Length: 197
Image (cartoon, rainbow, N blue to C red; front, side, top):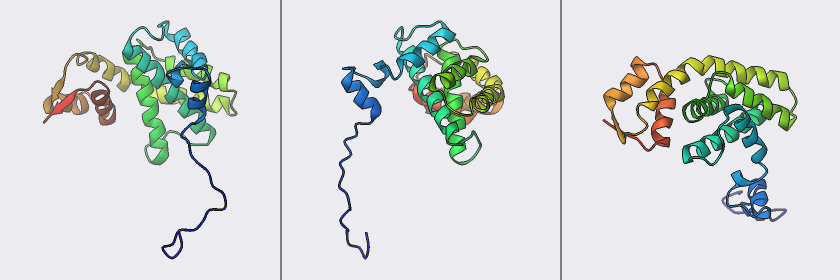
C-alpha cells in the first residue's frame, strides 16, 4: 500500500489453508493429521519408550499428540538456531519443552530421561544436522526442569478430578511448592479447571 492506495500484486495466489499435513490427511482419507503416516512413526517411538498404546484413553491421545508435535517443533526450531531461553522466541521453545515433559510424566507415567530418549529417536528419524547438539540441548532442558515438573505431577494428580481451585491452592502450587506459573496455568486450561479468586 502506497499513499493509502492498494497496489496490484505481481502474482496472484490463493491460500487454500491446505498445508502439507492437511493434504496428506486428505490423500490418506483420514479424519485427523495425527492419523496419517506423518505422525505414526513418531507415535511408534513414543510407544517404544512409554509402553502405552495410542488410542487407549483421550488424555493418552492428547499426550501423544502434544509430545510429538512439541518435540518436532523443538527439533526444527533448533535447526533454525532457535534455542531454549528465558526471553523472546527461545522462551516459546522452553515452554513447549516443559509442556511436553508435563504430559509425558503426568499422563504417560514418564520417567526422567524419557523425553530425551524420544527426542533422540526423532532426531535420528528426521536425519537433521547438529544431532549431538540437539540431543544435548533436549537432555539439558529435561535435566534443568525435571525436578520441578516431577513435583508438579505429584501435585497435579491430586487435582485431576476437581472443577475449581481456590487462590490459596494456586498460591500453594506456585509459591510454596515452587511450580512455574505457566505450567500451573497450562494444567488448569488443559483440564478445564477454574481458578476461583
